[in-house]
Length: 324
Image 1 (cartoon, rainbow, N blue to C red):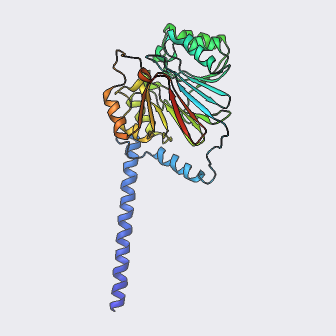
Image 2: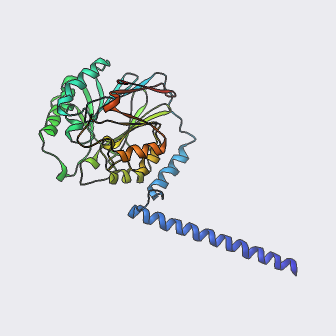
Image 3: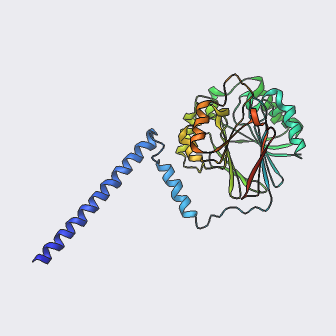
């Protein structure tokens, strides 16, 4: 009889544990569903993130780090208060932005000094002059195959001379226009670039910036243009892998970008702010410097270091800077 009572108690205990487990699973599912709709916490995943992680897990057995046999260079070119990045990977060239209107010739000269005779992919992160101002000059001077641009809501499409000059140069030179789509990946001769933004439609041109992640072997580099924190939050919700060894701080190191949530996801070894010397905006902002300091990364800035060039063989990573 005592033995029978013990079995009954054990069954009740197991039943109680199972009920508690089911309740926890249900509560988690409800929270995830709410977070997927309202995005109230970046620490809690959305269903999209869970799906992405699950699919990634299923592919882990097949997925291997792409082997590379050459070297890649990523140049964060000093164009003053603007942004310009050149990626070179085993003969492939990618140019992300080209600084202000008065920087076009400087960018062309720099590219030519690095042996660039063709651009495989240009990226115009968003139509502000400190990013695309010099791109028309570059496209006219150096044969360009394709350009990745954000798809803008009709009420955000600018009519500025800078933007129209870019579109004219694209048409004049027969450059293929590729609308930015999150998750689209383009192979280079070595490595690849992956589009990571914009991850939604926003009523601000900065937040419509194209995000690009360049991966070469085990090393990766991330740029997010001028994405504001609202766009960063949307990016976090995609479930994309945002980790990178080098991160070009958003919006030249502005405090309205570079949220701690995003920086924690990136967990970069190096952070670089592309900003002009004593610029009127105060970029990079002190608040961002403090965030980077808390994370323990190495901080670089074009206003003090000039052009910074990273070199990697897919495993090792080193950099040189123009000044200092």
